[in-house]
Image 1 (cartoon, rainbow over the protein chains, first blue to last red):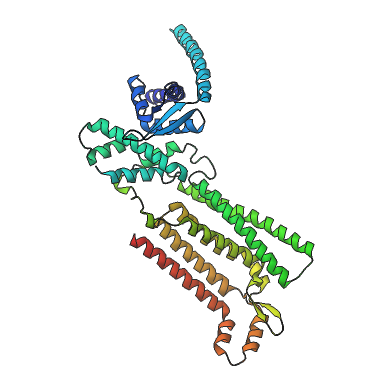
Image 2: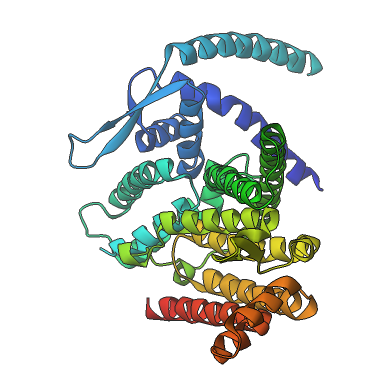
Length: 112
Length: 323
């Protein structure tokens, strides 16, 4: 494995760990899958729909999200929203992320 | 707009998911494809080329299915086999209990024994039967599941299976009934081969057609024969429609069943000697034909089985070709 592949693998792993945190954080209001793909991508976090859709369903299965079909518009859409349990998970993970990233930043700064 | 291509893609993604999830996932993905097409084409009507690009972007149906099925390949029996496994197990348990009860009643009539001994034997038989049924069904499903977890392969739009029409689909009830009947037959026949018997009204004598000891001695052939039938039904259940897989399994299982029947009925002397003797004595002279059938009962029985297997295979071929 060359350095380029190693970097790509590491980036993917770092991303994977943070995606759930990001998705939970963006679902305070009911949102449907594709609009979440768009808003994440506009914020500089591109995520493929074929990764996000199964992830939303998995988080719903874990009780972190709830969903509701809106058939009122011309296109029926499934809206996802965070549950109180998801909120709890989000808050704790967010706090951990902040602590971790501060420490990581500090260590990386020292290195320079 | 070529809605059919989208339908076929969605069918390929969802067909192996649990029933309850299929429609919901398909509808959600349909909305996603619509959104992606709308973004790509704006006000213009999407052409087939646009649909192909959007679907390619979503990835092969197999990859997408794998993303929905994270535990795929990591367990003994995963989805979509797990749901069917549970239903088949239920049917087999019921069939074993019913079969064992019928068998115990027959044994009780043929060879009366005390109440406690009868109840004890019945409970012991049911317990053993349930364990064996559980083992056979689990091994069969684990085998199918392991074989079904496909390796990543590039997908071709032309290979997407068409969405089956209602009448093409196989009735689940029919498959469950087939499995249930096979198990009841297996259990009753192995435990109480005396179910096939002649009752002489004059002497009130019960004469089994088969030699129970011989039938029990060749149990493995009978179990394999029943396993062929159950395999055939499980594949039908999983595929849900008549296709090449169902036909090939049917042909292979039927050939195996034919070989097993020939081995069983030609290789062993299964008839009860007492039965052959009493039939000849009973019909003495005036029913030459009946005597001939019963004297060659094994050959006659084999003929019936082979005929049924040929009919079943032909039915499978016709149903597959006609669709």
